[in-house]
Image (cartoon, rainbow, N blue to C red; front, side):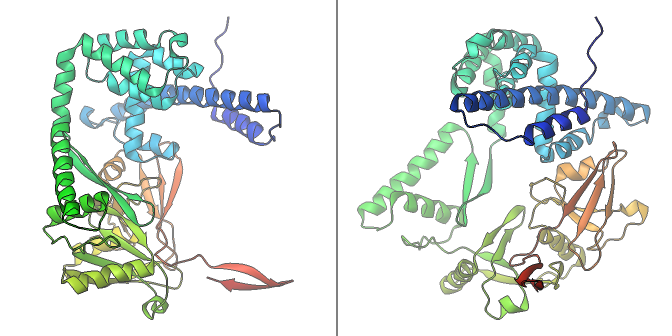
Length: 447
């Protein structure tokens, strides 16, 4: 019997078009069946993506070996190509490629359960992660015990499936689990990510004993302050005490306002905003993406710092009439450092690569310096470390495709010939000009 022909991208596009070109019915039972079938389809697609990623990685490495690329550098850029194709960040692409390799080579039963919809991609990644500390033979055994029988997964939640896997791993190789716990201590870190309403989550990843100790200390101090008559809630007090202890600034918060902090305010504004408009501001700090602040919030932040004597600096960024950042004032006069700051601020502190949302770490020449690329704002971009390394792999090309009066836009061409565009975000307060119909047959340009 002849083997089936491979699935092609064009076939998948036709299936997608067929799926999206039809309206759904109104029968309740049929709608539930449709939702379930689509979930199975998503899982099956993830399985095919995993197999395709592994095959692509092997092909790309073979090409690079034939080109004479040293073994230690073979595979560079592969995860970034996969990430671009999946509209994900390079870091996520690296995770997905590693996950795919594990599934295809060491966890065939989990891959089968992904194909038939018994597991979704998220749960399968968790299974691969929980077995990452044991040998390939033990991982295969756990895979068989947990995922060989689809019926054993019916009705099981994520926590239950992960718990089964974790218990098996701990029974089979307790020493490996202990080693992973010790390694996890070396991975301790602090991260920040945005939250709604101009708030942010500050997260510290650390051993549980230290984390509980910090929490208990903050809670005890907050309870003491409450007992002494402080009107703030327990949560407000713990947050304000954490800030005070971390920065060394006095705790001067109130129920309405958090304590003042030393700030450098990067204010991106037009002349109209400078004269008292209401356009929002971008708040940035080195190594973190920017966040949007309402104009009033930004003014209050600056005023509070001034009132309390906290250190405060202002920097103004200038944009032209088409929304492109063209200059900035700076306390620092060393040109390379100022230019690097400008490149980061032009992208709101986020890597300039398409789909990447990592903080800027590197300053990069779009046309490389060894090919006479100038060190200029137009030929420069702020990238994360992963994206900067990926574009150094053979076959990657980048070029500026925007005009001087447009927002900065870079086109990336990967070794497979696929093209991806990345455009610098609009400055705070900027709206794209558009025509609106003012009266029948009469249009006006607004911004």
